[in-house]
Image (tube, rainbow, N blue to C red):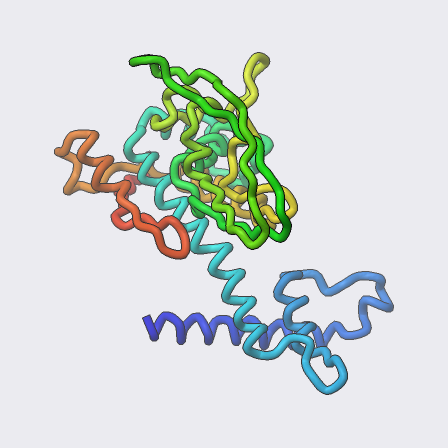
Length: 294
């Protein structure tokens, strides 16, 4: 682990050195051309804050600079890699879904041309990844501080006997005093049958495909949180993830590992979709086998 942190530190230092060099080389050019230097805007802004002075002090110290860079790398890559790990296992476990994804990608990019997927056209691929995030959100719970006394509306629901459907009951109001901590249970929201139907535990990408008579419930889906505090990297995460899925499936058939090929589907699922909770929801045994398509 120490070696990993050291390698990460060297990588971040290299990024900072190159960003500083670019800033120095392009100093004053934006005033002349009316254009900035382009490139990685977040990294450049952080380095500029580290170079700038407020009186005798840096606006951003070296430690703060590297801490921020590490946070962006962690948030932008660990979460996506974990979600993609679940997605590739699901491709192997649901070959019919994988085939549908392949047909979409092959229809949009026939032949051997380079693939540049976009969510506006890769509807099923995006639906596949969204369903992955519904079942295994990167952050299953979020804590929020309460700054002022408030109250939240609620409704009681109940089941009638052995029926699976829920019946709406009495409304109520829940007082929430200041200095409380409210826990947003994203997992509970994503598995709520009121929003997603009685098959909430089934992997069904089709539930994220809008039709003339159906629109999937945006208000009941929070893998990136929502509102003003929603994840700023949502669009990037979706874009890179569907690109990864499309490119891999176009070239390879995703299969369960050889040591599990003779097991039942339920056993394969139980083994491959194991997880634990750390900084994010972390798959612990996600692995697949790739076979090049001919």
